[in-house]
Length: 307
Ligand code: SF4
Picture 1 (tube, rainbow, N blue to C red):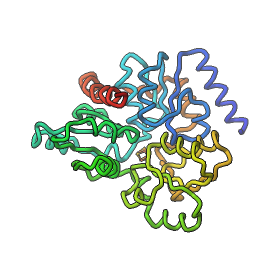
Picture 2: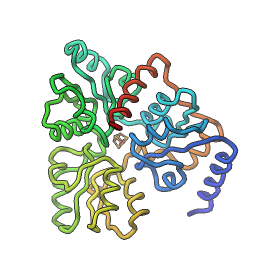
Picture 3: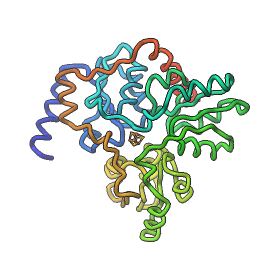
């Protein structure tokens, strides 16, 4: 670790000792940020951690919808984003008029929104899901109603195939996971026949078809560290490799595609976290009328996921 980085961490820790601060980071964050966080998890675990935290200040090291989810679930706390420009292009691809049209055309239908959505979209959704619980939650919804799944078509198709039920999809994908191709996996499998393929459900269906395991970031980490195998082809953002290597340093990890790096996630740095804690900026808030409705969809997710 460089001296400058150590100094930045010491300054962050000094503020933490003086104020009631809880730092939550996603597994796609830089390794040095995961290392200083109070909690590291996938988007579902981050939402629950924020909700259960007793700290006055919650700093969210993740993209915009993650900080918004914390603000929705914790209206009495100060929620900080160290880089408010860190956004998720997939989350922001939804046109609300498409969602409202579905609701108008299908009054009994349900809108299931991936947690990767802005607050205004959560506010018109019936329930939220994450990649770790989409299948489990949709399974609990009535089978005779039409469901619009937004925004990630690949995750929606994965859930639909697991549940053997049709869903309406939205034409949007994560550009990072969608970059992994079937050829990438086939080539790596040929080079490393002893490796298992672990992919995120945001990958394309033809990639998922080649996987030994498909799951959320936390699912992939758990699978890799608990498997008897020692070599894995990783089909999700490279940040998960930091946690796997910490727990199981002897495992060999091969990234499925060289560009599996989310630039928005990686735009957050230790210096930005320090600046955010020093200035208490940027504070993330959601207008109360939207927050209250969005909280219903998020709380319903937490309730259904626990059932
Ligand atoms: S990895 Fe994909 S889904 Fe996750 S924040 Fe980046 S663009 Fe959005």
